[in-house]
Image (tube, rainbow, N blue to C red; front, side, top):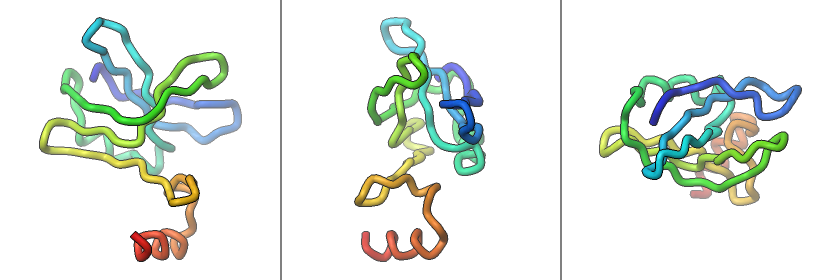
Length: 106
């Protein structure tokens, strides 16, 4: 991982948190994580220069190729999952009662 950054995926969207990672071949990739308010504590689990594993998928946003993270792991010590419901809705869009129901169904 190179650094934690702020991202705004598209005009009008809330600020998000992302990271720049350096691949083994030297290419830098922007990884979008989640809205900043949802992932604000993430910066405490990662430091510049840490080796991280990222799972997710590629997407094109405003003409830029980015990676949308579903899970980021820093060694054996810290892992952040950006889960989605069974119907694909991100957790940060749920009302508290919907979140409780989703966890009960796990």
